[in-house]
View (cartoon, rainbow, N blue to C red):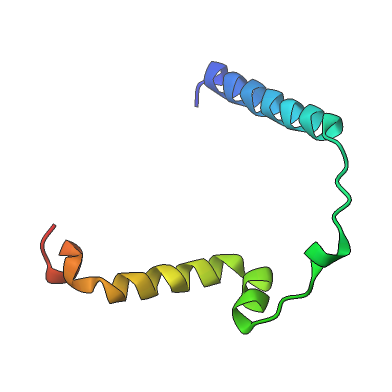
Length: 78
């Protein structure tokens, strides 16, 4: 790997991290009311809080199976 490319990537990464940290420091603290911090009520909400990626993938696969006749990849055509 070219050292110039590595240096540019490193500088971009560090400047991005610096930008994020400065924005976080300037952001006001938010005290949310207790009514907004209620515990999860359903099994789906509890799953979403513990494993959001798995829940999203399950929902995506369920939507894909529901509309499977519209997906060309399911029919073997691309």
